[in-house]
Image (cartoon, rainbow, N blue to C red):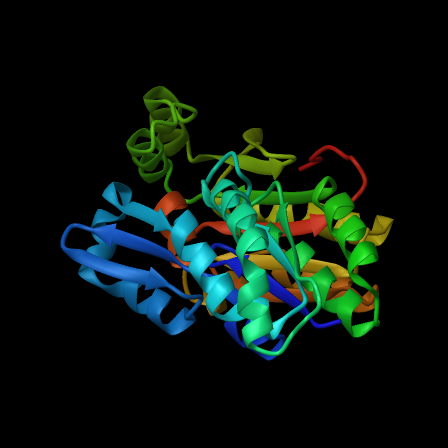
Amino acid sequence: MRIGLVVDSACDLPGEYLRRNGFTILPITVHIGDATRVDQRDERETLAFLHSHVAEGGAEAETSPFSVEQITALFLDKLVIDYDYVFCMTITRTRSPIYDNALQASYAILNEYRGVRMAAGHDTPFSLRVIDTQTLFAAQGITAVEAVRLLQAGEGAPKIRARLEHLALHTYGYMIPRDLYYLRARARKKGDRSVGLLSAALGSALDIKPVLRGYRGETAPIGKVKGFDNAVQRLFAHTADRVRRGLMTPTVCLSYGGELEEMRALPGYDDLRVTCQSYNVEMFESVMSLTGMVNVGKGAVVVGFASEPHTFEG
């Protein structure tokens, strides 16, 4: 059975890794004023955007995920021919319509694929499963990496499906933002009132940084730490502690809203890297997606891993 993997462009994994493992990307289009960029997980384009003048208007950006019709066309034109079963893993449905669009598209795809496959010489059924990762950015990478690992181990579609859906319930994404004013402006643009003006003002004045957690579809602050570097160090230390206690997959994913060398210079990074190496945990690092940066601001750090239930002890 030929099994294909699809993620949206908010999934923070290195572009080279995604290409090498044959992922199909559902792109997200970013509109800022008169400028339009299509987020295709190209780190060079993302960094160019970050350093260009249009990045200054990021808080007012509009993002457009693939529509139901575009997803349907992508599958019927290519994926139903190239594969027999496809797993489509999306950012949490509570933060984006991509999951709902893909799910709606799946009904049309499963109704219309037969003629397309017959014309291509395939007389076997086609199946599609849309999976809500229930998290975002670097944490989305956990299910994607596990899917690759299971495919390489020769596992079949039923076992992969059960494993990925179970893993989505245990994947944690933690984020430390740099600029609370930007985060508040962006939240207001999207109608999200979770970051109030007073919180942003106090946070900036006192240099208090929130620790945000994405877990089972909910994104909320679960801690406050004084100073960005100190907050990141505590997050890295928390992650290293979970590695030592035992993760559900041998994977930690990191993403950063800027040059990766800046992230690698942050306190606690080296300790986390060494801990992962010592426990045979693979650590993936990527520049945050263009979609991620316009939503949370440049310089944010995100860490994702799968673990049994726990609390942040930073």
